[in-house]
Image (cartoon, rainbow, N blue to C red):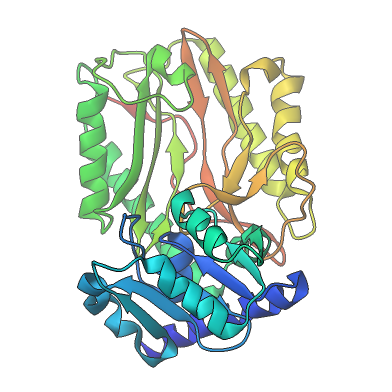
Length: 370
């Protein structure tokens, strides 16, 4: 526990260093993965405000409703506490702390209800307000070793679940929803009971990248886009494979599959510190476009992965931000043929000093499921 507390205190100090650079006096953080990032404590959005105030100078404060105060007691003396009762307005406690600290420039994280922000601005109209993204993005996108270890373990457990699933599950004649439940069960069996998402998109449904798993029955010859991930101690896994039911539908599918595989490898080989995010997207897109399928690759090649499934950095055209060692991103090109099928192959990849390191190691070749 002491080691973890040191992790959170280090993060708070890094935040303060960035606050200095941005000319900020306080971070106001609502219930979110940002709150957990600095405390280790998960908290959900509610009409009862729980928040974290990080002043540039002084002890951070947790604002918490009285009935939930016991849940944060384990945070200990590294934080001060404003415990508000049911008849109080919690923003009054926030205002009191802002005034006491003398903070003039306040940055607010994105995951907080607008109603609380508007109240704060009404009570303290002479302060300046900004989004906290300039600080939080820099912190959250580059993972510390504690985070990298959890992300790698999340991917390992997800790989094990997939290996178990493909060895034991029958898909032909069953619905997407039934197959998805089996995959969720495999994740739970391998230490990932908290399933973040599970897309099972068979046949023509696979041409919709974010298809909502439905009651369509899987038929022999159907490609099945399966995009899934779990949460391990607050950190996400994210992997996609496209097996086929019984047999591949035709040579066109096999050709397209090999193109996606080539594109994924091209993106992977581009991942390295200093490389603009858009160049990773371009590497994959060039492969697919050169083979004549450019119009059917309809999304970015990747996104950051951490305490949320999608976060900075985004590997997309127009984002010239350079990759940094410690970032973890998805590598997931695809081809989607309307009314026919889709193909996506995805791994989580860490950016290291020497290039990319895949966190997923299950086969990327075509897998036949019965």
